[in-house]
Length: 63
Ligand code: SF4
Picture 1 (tube, rainbow, N blue to C red):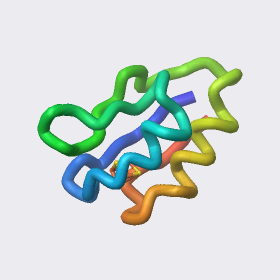
Picture 2: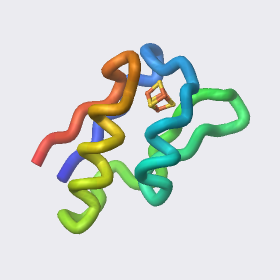
Picture 3: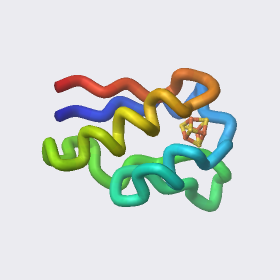
């Protein structure tokens, strides 16, 4: 699974970090960072939740 984060769309809401903390982190810049761009399939439901929760559609999941 690939996680794509378009940082230029991020507004730092933090919902991705809350829903999938092993994959996303809101860094000191106040914007999201990827901790793991290719997490295992066991993380799919959390990553999908983060994708759906992002207010600016900055996250894409590709399986
Ligand atoms: S949910 Fe979207 S806008 Fe919010 S911190 Fe994550 S990537 Fe940024």
